[in-house]
Image (cartoon, rainbow, N blue to C red; front, side, top):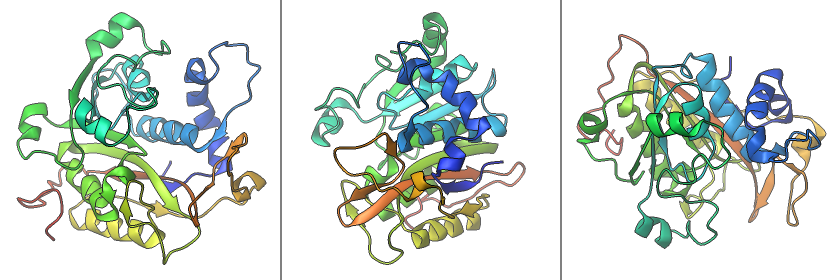
Length: 289
């Protein structure tokens, strides 16, 4: 079973993740001619990792409820709806997304349900029944939002929490959003991970880089609140894992250079045990210890 771990070539090409790659094929190989090889890309790994982690824990099934954060135009919303899940997809409001630079390309931000099923991963009528959308700032999760939306079987985000302004803000989000996860549920998030240093990193700004020590501290915070998380930060040793991609990017894109650092993707799996209520206190975003 998957644990919180780094993106590696071995995990990307595993039979388990291959199943989800085939289901996403209309998105990355729209011609459907089977001429394209599997994408050796960290973004593909993130989507497959999230899907497999949720599937292993029985979350992708009819009747399950999911909450996605910072969904942009990612295919997971439609993929999960096609599995019979009811999904609330969230992202910044248009003004906030514009100020953050997410609307410039037209390829990363949807701002609503339009664009979340553009590859036809879910039948249109089923998608309309199962998917709802609302604007939400990951840095400001209102205290009464749980009463409004209720608890969910699962939550997820794909490389969104490193864009919240600081390492602390990203960690606080992971801790705070567990309020939405019902007992017995799970949260799965991916983010940037600094593989070149456990000392220096980018701690503040538009894109921050988590180090091993930051992940271990986040795991300790979560465990103190009663959650389960197992962390495995072993890097892969295949040639594809050792390759550091730089512009113009190649077809092997598991690690890349970001400024002076080498970064890859990290997947986090946080489980809220059944029968063990979590009481993080009034400031449940985690800013107070």
